[in-house]
Image (cartoon, rainbow, N blue to C red; front, top):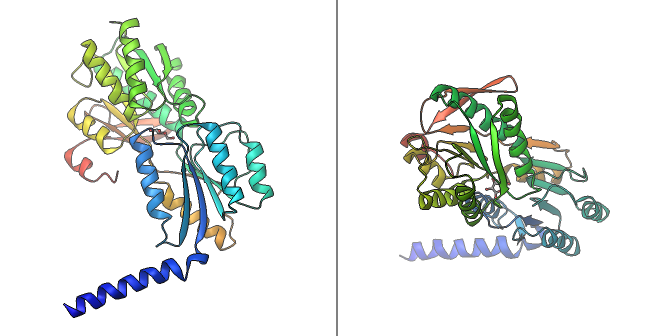
Length: 335
Ligand code: AHR
């Protein structure tokens, strides 16, 4: 018992030494996060908070910007005032960044961009995130093969987009549209669901009234919008999934959506990996060591379907596998 108490006491002293004696040595990082709109976002925040912990040598200043671009600019300016060592930004929208990034540069604070891109300034040292254009193309290419395999005569699509002006919305919309245009599909409508479940439900409720009996594909630009769309379709008596009248797909692939895929509510899911924080940390460590990190790093992502109907798709000349969701695949998912 004495020994156990001794171990506990030692551990407490060790912890306080890390937190106390080394407090000034902690690397001060400001992270202007988009908000808390989705399961994906929750996973991204959790990962960042775990990676940039005091135990790992960081003092993390975390701001949830609640999907408000003005609040996000204010958060970045707050980090400049606090004279943090590094600023991490997950940009809500892709434009409007050059002025504040110039302020960061003038203050000598390196900026690392995570997840979504900044498209109107290159005043950041590195970006780590997803290829949203490829995700959109993957969705289109999969639907092309799926429609052919299932003998779908017509493809009449409703899209529920993510937050307008975000690079995730822009890339997924453009990538899917490229294939849709080439195939001559009809995109009946494409509206903003703001990457939320409530947004997805609201848009789908209005679609069910305006396009009753006219659509056979619903593309949701994230999992949470798909959950909202399911509620709206259920209420309207529209069946979805591999056994239903409507092909329902989403982007992200967090566990709840993968469970829906396995259950046959969703037909396919195009992954967006939320665990970029460890790679961002590697970038900060390179900067600490005086090295020059890669300007762009893409996360590895995959494509998943309920049925084993389409085993691979070709994106920009490269053949990529489509994984059938099974209990085993689901059990091995990290988020
Ligand atoms: O930027 C990534 C996107 O933002 C995810 O697809 C979505 O779920 C999140 O809100």
